[in-house]
Length: 338
Ligand SMILES: NC(=O)c1ccc[n+]([C@@H]2O[C@H](COP(=O)([O-])OP(=O)(O)OC[C@H]3O[C@@H](n4cnc5c(N)ncnc54)[C@H](OP(=O)(O)O)[C@@H]3O)[C@@H](O)[C@H]2O)c1
Image 1: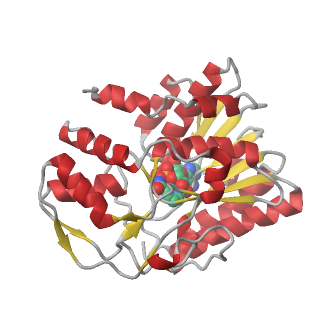
Image 2 (image 1 turned 120 degrees about the vertical axis):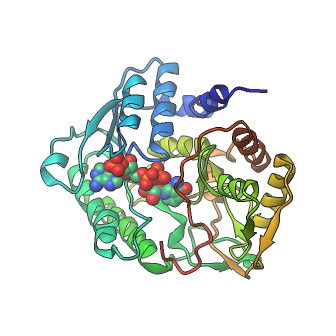
C-alpha cells in the first residue's frame, strides 16, 4: 500500500515522453495562472523534466496568489513566483517577456450574475496577453465547453466540428480562443489552444465528486449521463508538450481521455472500490458534453493513466482521508450556467 505522500509524489514525476520533449526547450517558461488546481502540478512536472535534462532555464509562476500557501509551495520547489493581477495594466507590464508562456487564467464559477467580469477575464484579457507576449510561443488553456451538447450515440465532436457554445461562460471561452487565433495570424505568434475537459486528480474532479457523493450515501444524478476525463498529470504533461506543437495559425487540440464514459459505470466501479451501495437519481439523457481527442492522442499517445487506475487511486485516497479541494466542477450542468 502506498502512502499518501507517495501517491502525491507520483503526480509530479515526469514521464519519459515529457522528459524527451522538454529536451527541445529553448528559454525560460512562464506559467500565467499558476496557483490554481492545475498550475502547481504543471509547474512541478516542468521543473522536474528540466532537472532530468540538466536544463537551467527558469520557471516563473504568476498569479494574484489569493491563497498564499500555493506560493510558498512553488517557491520551495524552485519556481520563481511573481504576484500580479493581469487585469491591472501596470502590474502586467512589469512581467518579464519570457519566450514560452502557458496561459491558464480563466473565470468559470460565479459567471452567471457576473457576466461582464467573465468576458473581461476570458475574452478581453487574452488580447492583452497576445499583444504583450507577441514574440513568445503560447499554450492557451481553453475548454471543451465550446462544443454544444451532442447525441451520445453520434460520437463526440473533434476539432473539425464548429464550436457552438451553450451559455455565456462557454461563449466567453470561445471568445478567448478567437482572440488567440486572431493574434496568432496577425502577429505570427505560435499558439496551441488546449481545449480541455475534464482534468481530474486525487483532490478534485468528476471521479472524486462521485466518490464523495457515494461515501455520503447520497444519490448520483444521472442526467448528464456521459463524460470524458483525463488524469491531471497527463493533462499537464500534454500542456507542456503543446509548447512544441504551437503554430501560426493556432493549433487547436481537444484534450481528454479516449473513452466516452458512463457516469453510472464509473459510480458502480467506485461503489465496489469503496465497498458502498450506490444510489442513483434521474436517467441518462440522449445528449452530453463530450470531446473527441484523437488528434492529441495521435501527437502525444494515449494518456498514461487509465480510468480504472483513476477510480482505484481516488477511492484509495479518500479511504485514507486524503485532502480534497471543495471546488465542484458542476459537470452535471446542462444549460451552460455556472
Ligand atoms: N480543471 C479542469 O478540468 C478544466 C477543464 C476545462 C478548462 N479548464 C481551464 O484550464 C485552466 C486551468 O484550470 P484550473 O482548474 O487550474 O483553473 P483555476 O483553478 O480556476 O485557476 C485559475 C488561475 O488563474 C489565476 N487568476 C485568475 N484571475 C487572475 C488575474 N486577474 N490575475 C492573475 N491571476 C489570475 C488564479 O489565481 P489567483 O486567484 O491566485 O490569482 C489561478 O491561479 C483554467 O482556465 C480553466 O478554466 C480547466
